[in-house]
Image (cartoon, rainbow over all chains, first blue to last red; front, side):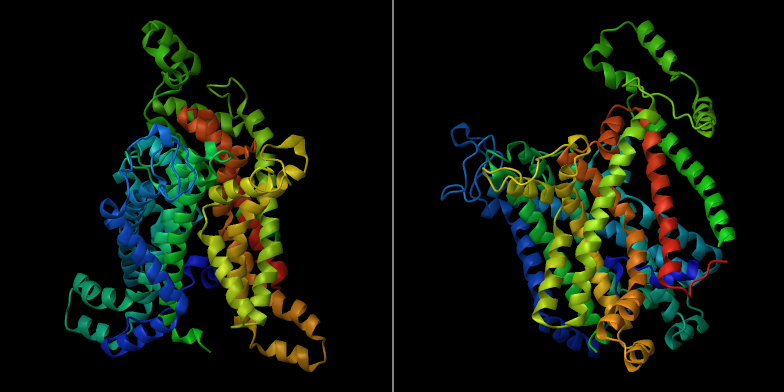
Length: 302
Length: 314
């Protein structure tokens, strides 16, 4: 039973084959394979534009995102307000730019937490095997099965929706895929000559893990991270939409949709544009992840 | 088969007890209490004796383990208790809402299969053609939209003549009128259909070169029969797995879809229950959520055996 699960149970985001870290000679081939993939490059461009907007929001945004203007409230998109205004007359385009930095920061930090937990779990699980492996993998199964948003809802009720608690919670929901991936990498890497040689020379376990297993097994994790960021942006927006997200003066995109849904009939642009921003960003990370995966895995081209 | 089923069903009990314990501990740890949440400002004006009396009537002044044991013994008798806030039996609340959530999830699942499997099959049969590229980009777009935003867009476009066409009711349950179910099911099913299309495609491609397909063609079966009975049927095994794995996602999606469409399901009951620290309601809903989850996963495993007769459960 368990074996059936392991061989076929690949959720969509985890359909990543076991490519190896491109060695220096392979790096150019990898780069060329990636650049040939139009969708992947498009993803990279979208992600770059989004990061740029987030970082330079104070420079690019035409208005102060929190400046109210009663006379211009709920103005439809026009030449003054590119994407219209909200019920306080605040410029939606400027608010979206500031929202980008919030959504992206949360996603990147949470993903780092989840990769950190996942890679450590995977290294330990794959290297030691036995009951440790069983324990960690059953734990990963349980995390996979968890309805993430419901867990988050309970979590923020206990710990308050501070930034830190949300990073941690999102990381705790996301590590299972990274752990499985790293574990399968370690299982194949630990039979390699250079690992066996390192062991024979008496290298310590942490050294083998950090010097040999981690760098050689990390490539697929990068693919997962790109897809994972996409997932986290979606989950975080759902949490904000329920009114349980990070409470800060500048709203995240999900919060903006939540605020705008009261005005959908009179001011469609209010809720539509933040959602579009989420969609484009998530699509960018998904495109990028798919492109990286295809470039890492030559077996996909038959 | 019977033995396997019995073993799986027995495993349900410790799993539920584990979830129950964790949930209870969590609701106990949550800051604030139902009385304060219910009274609001008035909490600070009432004399402490009144508050204490209210706490006593709900049994909140007892130590952790006493309360826990009380909850567990009641659950064994299938008594979920009363809501602290609504003064209604939790079993009544769930009895009303659970079928509606399941109805919505079934609707979403139906939509996702109807769209996802044909899309995946077409994509695989026409690999690298423009239609394959188009469908796969559409699938990625479907995966990239927040479900609650899709709901809003769907409401804008299909429920009112001011911003679109007035085809469907905006929201609500409509006393079970199926028309009210169409839009929420479509919205809930979109992202799952994208996942199913992707998995169906890659699985179809993987099965493509198998010997039994050549044999089937060689013995003169029509291409259509080969496709349906041999190619698709074998390609569906990973799809079934993915459906099982996506149940959690479907539950999350239904929480958000219910919120947008004002659908009277469990999801719309749990958020206020958490905000008011209504422990019996939280526990009841999570227990039923977990049970639903376990049952669907068990069904998935049983469907394997139907799709792939090689799998036998001892």
